[in-house]
Amino acid sequence: MNKQALETIAQAMVADGKGILAADESTGTIKKRFDTINVDSTEDSRRDYREMLFRTTEAMQENISGVILFDETLRQKAADGTPLSQVIADTGALPGIKVDAGAKDLAGHAGEMVTEGLDGLRERLSEYHGLGAKFAKWRAVINISDDLPSAACLAANTHALARYAALCQEAEIVPIVEPEVIMDGSHSVERCYEVTSAALTQLYAQLAEQDVHLEGTILKPNMVLSGTQHDAQAGVQQVAEMTIDCFKKCVPEAVPGIVFLSGGQSDEDATAHLDAMNKIGGLAWKLSFSYGRALQAAPLKTWLGETGNVTAAQAAFAHRARMNGLAAQGQWDAALEG
Ligand code: 13P
Image: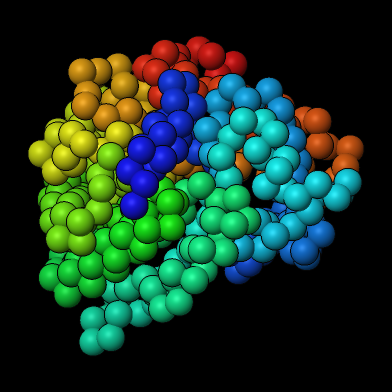
């Protein structure tokens, strides 16, 4: 393991004022996104849409440290023949790759999932390294209900995350470890805190057991939020304070950065929460973003698959990237949303 190379990549992923664009929707998920704007999902339409984002040059240079890609995109060429990974690298951002094979039903545990994809992962990582990937992502899904998650769900998912992370580091690829506690449900913010703490505690125990070099990893967690169907929704300051409190207890200081998923929050909530956490300050790790929907919802709605809308869609993406770049430094203000 080349620890120094891993640490250098991990630190670049959380450089000041920068975060990650998650553009690694699987073929099924991007189709669902395109369905909302009545655009057919084809190899070309997916390429055109993603190329549009990656060529939003100033935002990419200023606020995006890396882009998570789906396998298809890492192999695709832009309309002018340049590999999309090169288009990204030309902006100074790092190309990354989603390597899990998706969350599947966990045997014997109704309502729970386990992420697959370890078989053959060493060979795939070696190929991805050759294709220019500097980091990878693996997402575990943890649902909350009165009696979920089960111990089996947490054990299976954190074990898989740790084995994935160890394989990544062997291939000189920085693993983003993503244990996503899902926000859907009627649970309270306190219950989300409890489950997030349990997931993170087990995750770091498993990472230690597999001898993963924490300085060469990035954590991608959920924020501590009220369930979407819960009556009383925790406010921005409470979310920020509870999330920070949870991480201080569960995330080792050796971890260089924490990049949040947006998980279905509104664009502005995702930005406001990140900003409020950074305004608290005095933290051991960098706190930034790795948003999919909270960066892409606005440009997707503006684009509508029309070439004539590209400039406006790029402006919408640039705005969200800038707002989140400010939030990553605790310098955002709602008035900037205009
Ligand atoms: P969202 O920000 O839309 O939750 O997506 C981030 C991601 O990459 C989930 O794995």
